[in-house]
Every structure is written in C-alpha cells, then in structure tokens.
Image (cartoon, rainbow, N blue to C red; front, side):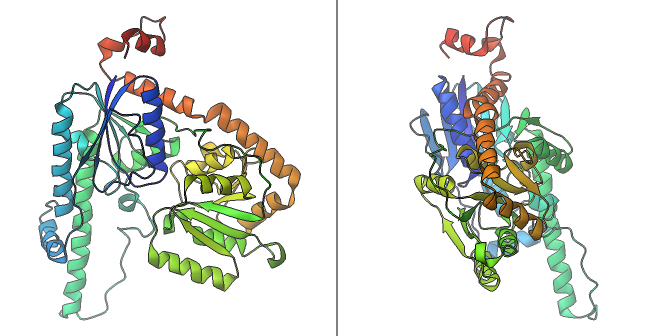
Length: 432
C-alpha cells in the first residue's frame, strides 16, 4: 500500500503508538509519507528511517489577547475562532499536498489541540481512516472541571457591571464550546472508519459523537521495553504527564497511608506538565512526608532502567482510554497497581498481572504494600505480566491489526483475497 500518514501529536503514548505502527508497516514493505505540523513534538516519533518523506507544514495556533477578544464576539454568532480557522487552513494545505501523491489511503491520527482532526474534511479521492486515541474529553466530561457545570446564583444587583461581565463570560465560554462541538461532529463524520484503542474508548466515542468506531488494540515493542532482570529497589514509579487527569496527587496521598518506616519514594516520569499543578504536588508531598521525585523528558534508556529496578508501578489516571504504561511496565517485569477504570480494565487482570483498586487512597496503599511485602506475589505478577504482554500485547499483533484495517479500505481491487491467499502473501505477490 501507499499510505499517507497525518498527525499533530505531542510526545507520549499516542506518539509511541504511531511510531510502532509506522515502523511495523514500513518493515512489511508499505510505502509511507508523513504529514505533520511545525508544532508537533517528534522527539519520540523518530520515523525518518522508515518513511519516504516527512512533510512539516507550518502552523501557528497561539493568539494574542486582541484576537481572543475579537473571537469572543465572533463566537456569539457561532463563528469559528481564529485557532480553528488556522487549523482548517493548515489541514487544507496538507490535503492538497497529499492529493498530489498516488496514495491508497489516509491514515490520520489525533490532534494535540483538537483531538478530532480536521484533515478528513479535505481528503476526497482516497479512503480515510482515523485512529483516535480519545475524544475531546474537556467538552464531554469533568476533565477536570465540567465545562457545562451549573453556576451558583449571582447575588449582586442585576444592574451592576459585574453582573453583565459574568453573563458575558458565561455566554462566550459556552458559545465557543458549542462551536467546537459542531466542528468536531463534522470532523467525525468525514472519516470512512474510526479506530479506537479499547472498548471503553469506543463507548466514550459513542457518548460523545453518537456513533462508535472499531477497537484496534495497541501493542508494546519488547525490544524497546526489555526485561533486564535487575535487582529491585524500594521505590514506586508513576508514568504520565504532570496534569490533574493523570492524578499524581492521588498517588502521593496513597503512599502517605503507608507507615513511614516502610514508605517508598515516588518517582514520577512525565513529559508535558502544568507548572502550577507541579508546585501543588511538591507542596502536597512535603506536607504528607512523601519523597516525591518528578522527572521530565527522561531519556529512554533511563526509563527502561527505572522500569526494571522499581518495585511497583502505581497508575492513578482518571478514566484512561487505554494506558500504555501498565503494559510497558509488565514487559519489564514490573507489577502494576492501577485504579480499575477505563481501558486499564482491559489490560490489567486483577491478581494476574497487577492489582486493581478503587480510588480510595487507603485501598491503593494496601495494594502497593502487598506487592512490596510479598516476594511470592511480586514474582507471580511479574512473570504473568511478561507472559501476557508477549502472548497478547506484542507489537506484531498490533501491526497485524492496523494493517488489516488499512487493507480493508485501501485500493480494494488490488488487495482482494481469493479466500485462500493470506494478506501477507498477497502483499508479497503484489510487491506492495
């Protein structure tokens, strides 16, 4: 196949997933070109060795206060914001370039700024497949504060200036959100097929857009996340950005429930972070006497060493759509204590490759303490974790799934099976 890949991703799990998909597809002989923006973070998406070309198209999203105020007024008439218009122009340019190539399919991925990407609107001559990691949760759920939450009654005189300022701000906020929802619905309907990373994500898609997708599970590259059989040290590890939805604050509160004499330190590895939230984490850990070590943008080799020397991965994310971290930890022989929500329930089997708990800090602390104090339990969870990743969550399985999805759409006459010939045989026969 000739595949046009589009993404506008930050670093993190979605970026790693796309890297694995591109690498696997390229190694099977498919021709790939990538389109992305000047704002995407490609530190962990180094795919130049696997693709024919990476096209970096300029994009400017940041706006000045004056433009924001104009956009506030425009939103009252439900008109697009400057950010949306810039993204539309960017995607139109990408689509024009893609249209000049002889591609079989568009393989679109999530957008850092809008989640549901706009590129599908402008591609008309080839099938369009979207791998959506999650909907724009801030529009549809408390993430972390529900946009549509009820407001307290205003006690000041209705004739006061502050009253009208409050009414104006609420109107602008809700109008902007409704404009974005409208645009997201249009984007969703522009794709021929939408893939998601878990059954939980498919339910989220159905709740958000009124239509579902198809589950296409991700996988872990065991060469990138090897089991090194190193001595374990008495610290607990967390993985995820320094933002409230990842809830490192809950991890700190949980470890504070473990007696000080045996309380492990918490090493939290993340990429992007909110400075104000990080400051609150430092204050909280100091107040609760929990040794908290935040580490940003650690080199991959350091991450592997941490996963192979920690004694437990503590995964506290709220409604995580899939969660790479538990599987990456399992690949390195590290048992997981995870809040039993979202897609994690599809990857962590309670008592087999990890322990699932509720959000109560005491329950989480008890689960962590069990793993730290019971060597037999640790070894059982460690061995099972390595086994389940190897047998079910390996990268070859993930590439099989994404390849099958792409083949089901791309140039069907070229890749139709006769009922006896396998996909790989067809591809070899066609010399791809």
